[in-house]
Image (cartoon, rainbow, N blue to C red; front, side, top):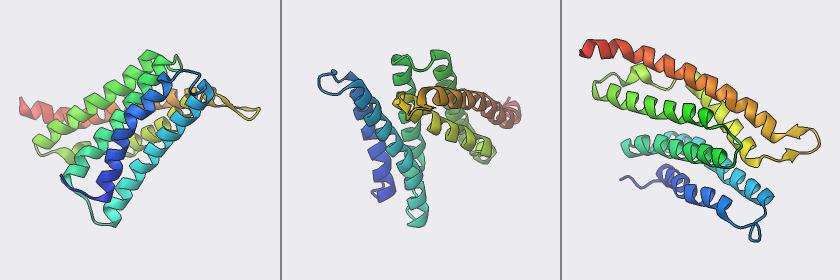
Length: 190
């Protein structure tokens, strides 16, 4: 395992997951629901920022490693999955939307693994569509976690719901994109 700052940031995201989930199990006498929402939103936003930061630092400091390339997407998927499950648990997100997003992540991860094994990983590299999907998720999830209104006119839950629907549509679209890239390779294998 490579010990460097980018990998440390990735590990911090993974370690933050139980803290993030645990916030919602605190009794109201310890932390009010409004404060639970705020703290969980801050933890998730911090994780999203470190996701960008660890990649930037790995390139800027020339500290890229195979371990970091493996661990970074795992940390991302674990944090997003935990957030989606929490949102379903809190009844702020429908289970079908969470299943679409989580199912796509598992499918595309397995697809990338298989394509790497047959030496065709570039055909399923992250696309611009996948980046837009991720951006939609990273806007939607904190808004849904925060849940409360911001000021008089900004309904975080409503706007977060719209963004998560956009993310779900882009999730399906990007999965089809990746599958179309992989199907010719699958046919060659038979």
